[in-house]
Image (tube, rainbow, N blue to C red; front, side):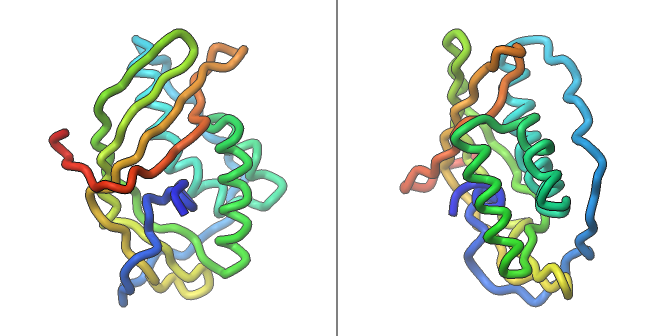
Length: 172
């Protein structure tokens, strides 16, 4: 699993005995990202917004999830996230915490961009949505490569996130 719910930064690792905040349902839409000054700023902003949007979608009613996610995600990632959230929720789990991003090697060519992230997800994981008990913790040095595309509406959205097998260094 490599996308927030599923990317949630590879949070399917170790056991924990802590507790997570009580999950809640929300109907509040994602607030618009402030206008970025450059394409690189916009690409980085939407990549960072992907993770909180994934958590909002997890806690939303199933019929509301797509509208939340399509503000920051495009196909094929959008469908992958929706399937991942449904699978996560079917096992009475939600994600907790947020990964620490260390993006590098941002490349933009026209309406397509890629970036690498040496993510530290140790302050996040999965929790039981009924009890709030933290079930897993993520790991550090997770090397992700994200593809971001600009849509017809001139908005950047993340279309793919893949994990590289070899770990990375946050100073990369």
